[in-house]
Image 1 (tube, rainbow, N blue to C red):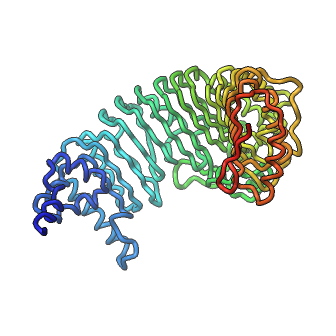
Image 2: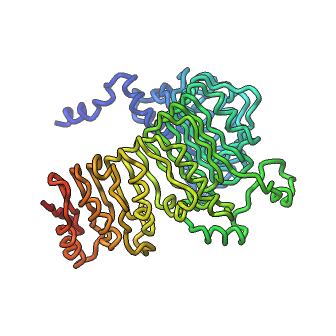
Image 3: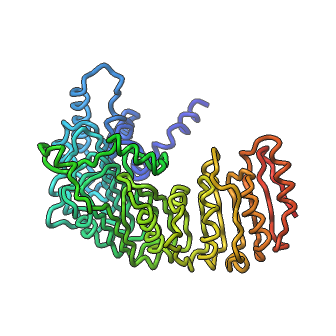
Length: 495
């Protein structure tokens, strides 16, 4: 019995080297190297894996009573030995996470080694006190397909730069040397398909220009100190500015005076420009840009927009709402549109002098109901989306509501009468303005096939009363499947 157990236990060691290398290539390099102690069969397998993943937090135990310099030496020695003894000539993926600025020269040496071995995916994450500048050789890598740069990285883009194979580019709060550095980098990627940009600090990139003819997916997150995550109201942002919480840092020599850093041109604005004729997916979370220019987005399929009061503040609220209008007009040919509660709240009062563009291609619309504002503008979006088929509403703020009741449209929108076939309402509260919108949709949506309401956050005793009201609403579509997901976990169906 012991013999049988021993044979079954060691089955994995009988697999071909290529299969074993593939398996351990998914492990961080620390653990991949650790497999060498299993047996003679495993001793040198790690040297042939195409993926290298170095993480100083994972390799070094921060709780051990040793100094930072000793930790740095241990990490440097480990990476050096792995790169020295590795037999792979083509690195598929090289990931490096480092938090010690003293290793900047070693880091550049490791990056050069990866480049010399024709690395295809490079993922650099530096959490150092001062940004690390990448070596000149980095800007002429012909084999890179995926590039991810995060945080303490300074990009001094040379006049000549070329990434002929790069298809995926992620830039997370990196620093650029000049205001046109980002565009120079993007223009050097002739086959770029996916771009992710995160911006967590104000800088001298006044105009962020994304002009990429091959780009298919674009995700933008522009915020400062994570303020977008807590969705500050306009007056709160103004107060924070008065308290000097957010002062735009300048990229330049270390001896530049604070007075010079604060002397920003009064007419200078942060602007986002997107020109991507093949773009299919767009996600924008932006609390920095004060102006937008969207053009040539004829291929757009899905778009998510989460914008609000900018970090620096805008005194003219009409102009401020106008920039959101320009953004929506630039993406008006999208098929699936999703708008955050912050966006809809920021549009409040916008229709004095501005009108929503026509969304002729929109078949799916998702609105977040923030303080009731999602439903306040529902009428306008229904009027401007004549081919809408699917409507999703989600209540994202349940503490208070500034809308007492839902005002009925003067006439039934075309999409409601002819095309709307599915409605989903998430985190339904049973408030009067919600019930008014539901009643209107049920009464006028002639081809509605399905309406589902999620009320699992209801309080005990509330459910019966509201369900009685829902069951009494007139329905234009006899084939509509009307269901309510109750707080008890059950489902109520209304025929």
